[in-house]
Structures are given as C-alpha cells and as structure tokens.
Length: 159
Image (cartoon, rainbow, N blue to C red; front, side, top):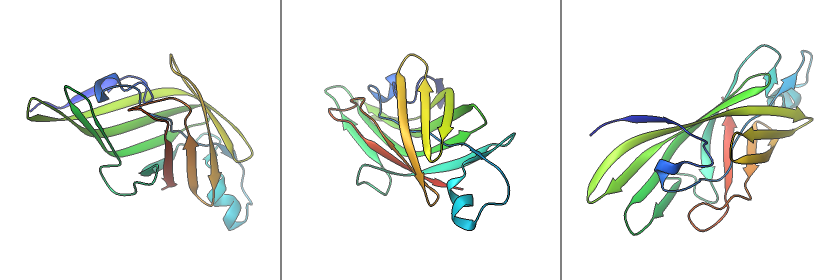
C-alpha cells in the first residue's frame, strides 16, 4: 500500500472519485469578546485557526461519506481545516478501493478566504466559491457542487 498526498481542490477530489462538496473556514476577530463571540471568531489576525470535520450531511461517524462507482469505492474518514487571515488549507483523509485493494489517500485544497460577521467565503482555485456559517464554534459549509450524485453539507468543529 502506498500513501499519496494530492494537492487538488478539496471540492474536486479527482482521486476520491469526483469532486466532493464544500468545506471551509472562518476569520477575523479582535480581543475582548464574550465567550460566545470567541467561539464565533474564527481567525484572529496573524494566527491560524483549526477545525476538524465532524460530519457530512447526517453522517457524524467515519466514514463520513462513501461513494461507489463501477470501478471503485471511496470513503472520507476524516478532515481538517486550517484558516489563516486570508487563506485556508483543507485536508481530507480516506481510502479508495479498486479491484479489492484498499489504499489510503489524502487530498488537500488550498485557497482564499474572507469573512463578514459569521459568514465565511471560500474560493477554491478551479472549482468555485462556497460559503459557510460559524455558530457557537460549529462551521457549516453548504455546497451546491455535486459529488457522488448529490450536494452536501460539511460540518466542522473549532479546535
């Protein structure tokens, strides 16, 4: 078995069988917030804020997503999201099974992010723009990009 790290759009995930859905991050805040504001403030200027994938659609345990085609089965088992002042990095880890052989794979997406209040806008190169909402430390990203026959909602938890 070989472990491959791909630098492709997390929404395209060409090695995961086809484009996944959306995900992404959050952003700017200053000191002096109340506890709820601190949970909603994703990125403080000059820092990186980290999230962990906790669900895709209604699935809240790994594998979060399973997609089977005529030639392979792809599973998304985990994911992370790191958000900086203006950029993000999303990583999905999982497996691909072809001809009875299962191989671990990791897929990475890097792009731009902007924040307005609790709304986060992610621009994934070559894929498109996606939005998410941060509420009480939970980032929900709704995708209008079809992967494995439907669109998806990704849920991240602030770390």
